[in-house]
Length: 419
Length: 167
Image (cartoon, rainbow over all chains, first blue to last red; front, side, top):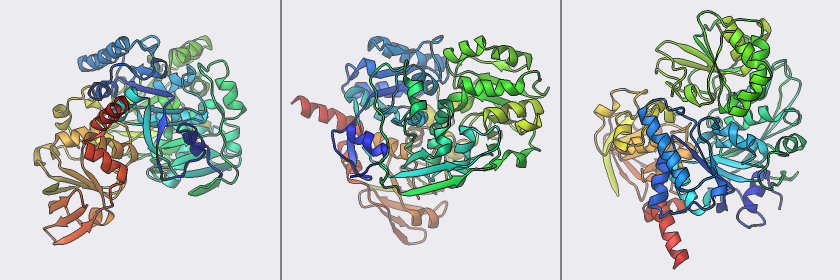
C-alpha cells in the first residue's frame, strides 16, 4: 500500500506495515524537549502522572531560550526550575547560558534530531525538523509531561498536502519567501491538522538553512508537520553531526494526497507578511512607503549562519538608518563563533546594528527589542499577531533576512536591489 | 454536564498571543494568567466575564503558539466553554488535556450573537440559544477524546495505563 513520507515514519514508530490518515496511533518518540516557558508546567504534569525518571535521558533536552539570559525575576524562577529538573534527572542535553541556543537552531546543529525521527517539543515551531525528513510537531506542556514519563504519545495520522515548487524566481529569493508565498496562498488554516510536504526542483536546490525556514513556518498554515524528503543535501548536513543512527524515508510515487499545489514561481519577488496575520502576504515592491522603527534579524526561523551572511552582504559598507534599531540575534553559540570568525560581527558593528546573545527575546515580545504603541518592525521571525512584539498597537512585517537588512538601511520596507 | 452562560463573541483566527500575551508567560500560575486573558483583543474582558460564560469564535481558534497557558488562562477566567467554527490543532489537544470543554459548530459560530443566553450539553453537543430559541448540534467529540475526558484528562489516563502495565 503506497504511503507518504509522514505515514511511513509514523508506521515505523508503531510497529505497523502501514497507517492511514484519520486513524489514531500511539507512536514511540525519538526525542522530546521543552523550554523555560513550557518546561515548568510540564514538570508538574510529569510528577502528577507518577513520573520518577524520564523514559530515556539521552532522548530528552531542556533548553532555556525564550526569556534567558533571565529577563526578570519571574523568568529567573522558571529557568531555575528547568535547570533543577535537568540536574535531578541527570539530563546530558541541558544547555546552560553560554552553550544555549534557540532550540530549533540548536537541536539540528547538535545532531540530536535526525531524519526518520518522531519528535515532539513543547513549542509550536518543533515542526522545523521536518526539513530533515523527520515527523516533528509541537505540543502543549501536558502532552510533553506525559511523554517524559512514557516516551510515547498519540497522534491522529494526518492527511498530506503536497506542494510542488518550480520555476526561476528572482534574485534574493529563499526559503522565507517560498513559505510566506505558500501561507499567503492557502491561509493561516489552509493546512490545519495536515502534513505539508514540500517538493519540486526549487526545494531540491534549497540549502538546509532555507529548508529549516520553510518547515519552521508550516505551523503558520495550521499544519501538524512541514516535511521535506531527505536527500544528498540532508546527508551532507547530518553526516558528522548525528548522535544516533538515522533513516531516510521518501513518499511513494503513487501515495495519496488530499491536495496537490503546483506553483511556478518564476519572477517571484521577495515576500512580506503584513500585520496582523502571516497570510497577509504582498510583494515587497507594494510596501515601499512603509517606514520602520526596528529591524530584527534572527529567531528559529532565520537565525542561522546563512541568514546572517545574507544580511551582512547587504549591510557591508552601509549604515542602519538613523531612526532605526537593527537587532541581530545569532541562533546558537556556534553561529556566533562562525559569524565572528567570518568577520560578520565587524560588518554588523560597522553598520551600527546591535548583536544580541542567542534568545527568542523579541520574537514573542519577551525582551531585547519590544515595540511601543505605534511602532513598526520588519522582522525575520514567524508571527505578526496583534501585540506579538510588544504593544497591542505596534506592527510587525515578516520578511527574509535580505529584506530586513535592506529595510534597516533604507529606514522603510525596501527591496535589496534598491540598496 | 450542562453549561449555561452569556456569549462573548470573537472573530476568526484568534491567536494564542491574543488569548494570553507572551509578556505574561514568565509565570504559569492560572490565577495570574487569567487576569490577562484576551487582553489584547478586549482589555475589559476579564472584568466583564462571569463564571460559566461562553466564548464564541470563528475558524481556527487558538492558532499560533503551543502555550498551554492559553487554555489555562481561559479556564482560569472561569469561562465554561469555548464554541468555535474550528480549532487550531495544538490548542484542541491542550484544551482536552487540561479539561477545558470545547465544541465545534460552524452554524452556532455564525448565528449566535454577542450577549445571547446559551445553554450547552457537553455530552450530546446540543447548543440552545435561549435568546433566539434556536438549537444547534455541535460536531461529535472523537471517541479517543471522549475516553480522555472520561478519565479526567491526560494525566489520570497515563497514570491508569501505567498502573495497568505494572499490575
